[in-house]
Image (cartoon, rainbow, N blue to C red):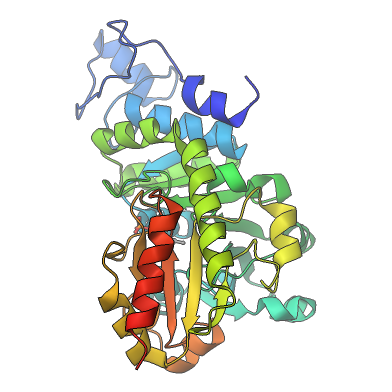
Amino acid sequence: MSNFETNAIRNIPGNPHQREHSTPIALTSSFTFESAEEARQMFADEIDGNIYSRYSNPNTAELIHKLCVAEGTEAGIATASGMAAMFGSIASILQQGDHILAARSLFGSTHQLLTRIFPKWGITSTYGDISDYQNWDKLVQPTTKMLFLETPSNPGLEIIDLEWAGKFAAAHNLILVVDNCFATPYLQQPAKWGAHIVTHSATKFIDGQGRVLGGLILGTKELMDEVTYFTRHTGPSMSPFNAWVLAKSMETLAVRMDRHCNNALAVASYFQDSKDVEFVKYPFLPSHPQYELAKKQMKLGGGILTLNLHGGLARAQRFIDHLQMISITPNLGDSRSIVTHPASTTHSKLSSEERARVSITDGLVRISVGLEHQDDIIADIERALEKSRL
Ligand SMILES: *Cc1c(COP(=O)(O)O)cnc(C)c1O
């Protein structure tokens, strides 16, 4: 099986016990042993097998297997949320005194991790700007161990050159970690460009229907041994139920992403010349500053776009309040279209200077384009734009 769609549906480890066609949920905390000797051997890693669901579980194993096939990675673990994956990917590998070089445009909570939480344990970081690749050499310190980035970034939709990142990491002997949440492995596989670790918030497009939280850390066998040791003993495990939901969702990821991307491109194209917006940002619109790069490393443009409205915060809030169908909620990657105002919500903890540097203006609204008919999404936005004029 070599095609993404077929693998996501058919490439499943093991055989179900009762010949079920749909994988059953293994809702159990622990697993039994045939004998005291078998228990000893499993604990000693002499034989494989499930011991305890904080360590492994058939449902998380199926999800991890599918993601490894999709991303082209050797091993992985599933976590309770995307942030548990972001935290685990760093905390398991780095130690006091280590330094992280990161691209400035990061998810709000990831920014909190790097600037406020890891420094408590002596792990520091420096941000680089993607407009300035030629100067990143100067940002590498003798203690720099990791290059951390997110592309497309949330919510600025900045695209980082993964080929450049892979080469830069190799040249400086850095572990390259890529948060692939926005693209999903259907659109982009960072490991192909040299990423050692790929992280996900499975809460978003992988679930695709806004039901459960989940995260994944995927990567080389060598690094994942360290990550697995860390997560087994610190306990950010994913529930088997959530893993079952997410493994099923993987079966429809390709068709959903095709529709998300087609709808998003249609909405972005429709509003790009609207007099109500300063500009529309979408990776596959030719006006996107990294359009060529997006085309090179992504199969399609993704399900997220931003509208930068004239009239700042007040206009953005009036626009949101006039939407009738599109939901006001902080999630993204749902079958339902969603609007958020990053400056006053997800990125409100950043100073206005910090926001400006990652292109989050007061008039910016993020739209996660859902699976409704594109005409209805466009009509809702158009009506709200009209009604929000003064
Ligand atoms: C949502 C998100 C996260 C965090 O994931 P949770 O599942 O909410 O913990 C991390 N990175 C990006 C890019 C996200 O969009």
